[in-house]
Amino acid sequence: MARRGSYAKGIARREEILDSALDVIGRRGYQNASLKDIAEVVGVTPAALLHYFGSKEDLFTAVLRRRDERDAIDAGTDFDTARAAFIATIRHNTEVPGLIELFSRLSVDAVDPEHPAHQYFLDRNRGLRTAVADSLSRDPAHEGALDPDTMARIVQAVADGLQLQWMIDPSVDMAGIVDKLIDALSARAAG
Image (tube, rainbow, N blue to C red; front, side, top):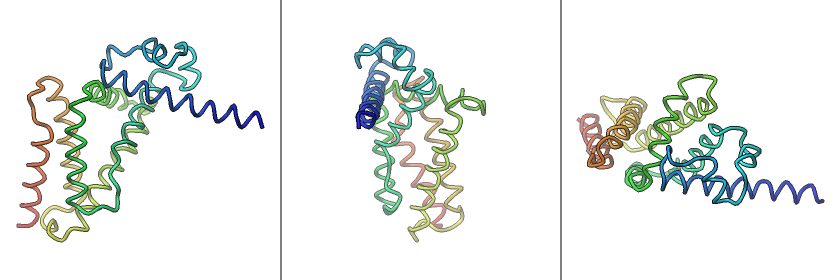
């Protein structure tokens, strides 16, 4: 019985670490969020963090997964609801610039198939495209010249690329641009 209690405590501690890391990185930024900083917030040592996650890259990948869980859009929602949720997530991201920086840096590093975040990005990209394509395919107003998967890839590429532009120039209206892009693609598809 004690074993189950220890396991549950370990799971709870891991969740606490993830939530704290998400907050620290979101507020301080990727470069200013060391393992030591995150450990201090949780009340553990940096070695304890590595006990739960193995490496800094594993921890940061888990942080991105946690962010995605919080931002998840129900795959069964209609196009307009999914679109509004996607745009709201992009707007929210401007309030946590450290997470945008973490996402952008890890996405470059994850090009290497051996990187701990490689599979995360494959799964995330596939899941996002599927969710967008599914919502588009269920909306007859958006059928036409561009198939839903192509539209989903374009929207995802623009959204991810705009994050880089926004990091350089925070006046870039990521959400507004993506919203207009969806309008333009939808109008072309409907036409």
